[in-house]
Length: 104
Image (tube, rainbow, N blue to C red; front, side, top):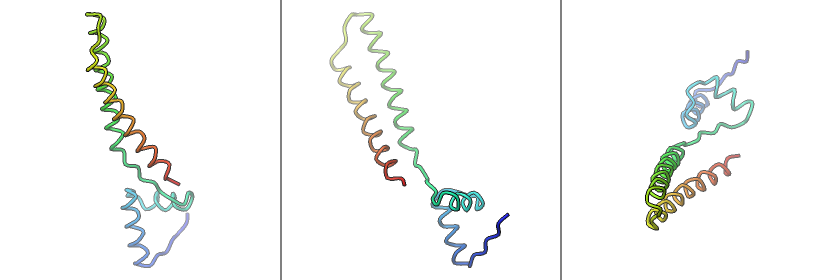
């Protein structure tokens, strides 16, 4: 067991940093900072968007495959739409990778 004494100003700063990191447990926050020297809060909104776009592409691809099997043809507009959606996924993925690369 370790005891830590802080001034009111230091304690207020500790709480502010915990809040900024999204951590509600003082013990967890202090342990993480002592052992690793940093806490990282990841924003996962882009993950949800990527999953949504992947589902849409998957659904569209299945529809295009059914159409191709039934009628023996695929429309250029359908392929362009799928390319556009895949480009959106790629852009979201690149922005997340850039953000992750800045974490030290």
